[in-house]
Image 1: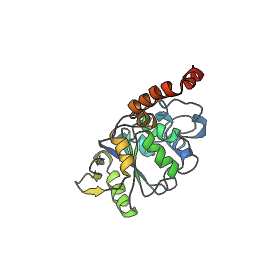
Image 2: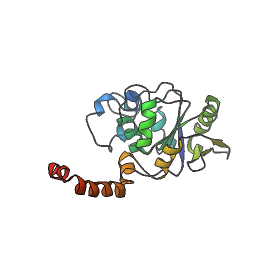
Image 3: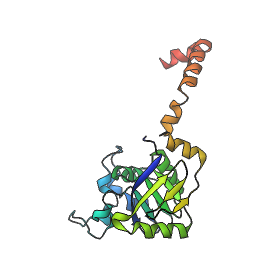
Image 4: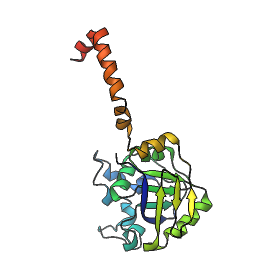
Length: 206
C-alpha cells in the first residue's frame, strides 16, 4: 500500500448526503477481486448516460475536476453495504482523501486499509471547504497528515483529528499484511522455537 504523507491536488465538490457504496461503485462491478480497473466505474450511474456517454454536468466529468485527488462531500459518506470495492474505485480513479462531516464506520475503516485518508470535520468547516472546492481549477488544497492540517486555496488552515494508530499505518503505507510483516522477525523466532519444542507441528504442516 502506498504511504500517505502530504497530498496536494484539486478538490472536487460533491454536496450530497448519504452517498452510499452502491452510488460509489454499483453492484454489477463487484464480480472482480482486482483492486485496479474500477476507477472508470466510479459513480458510474451519476457519470454516464444509458448509452455510455458522459453526463457533462457531473463534477468529475468537468475538465477542472478530471484529475481530482480530494472529494469534499456531505454527511454520512460511504453508507450502505460494506463493499471494499468502494475505496478501490476511489483509489483507482486517483482519489486519496475524502472530507465529510461523517462516514459510515465500515467504509471509514476500509479507506485506511487501502491508503485513502477519510477526514471527518464539523459541518461549518466542511461548508467552507466545499466553497473552496467549487472554484474549479483553483480548488487546490494541501492535506498534510503529519501535521494533521488542510490548507485551502487562500492559505487558510483547518486542523483535523485522527486515530494515532491509523495515522501511523497511513504514514508508513501499512495495510493488514504490512502490519503483520512488521512482526516478521518475531514470527520467525517463534516458528524456530516451536520447531524445536513442538516438532510434531512442523511435521503436521509438512
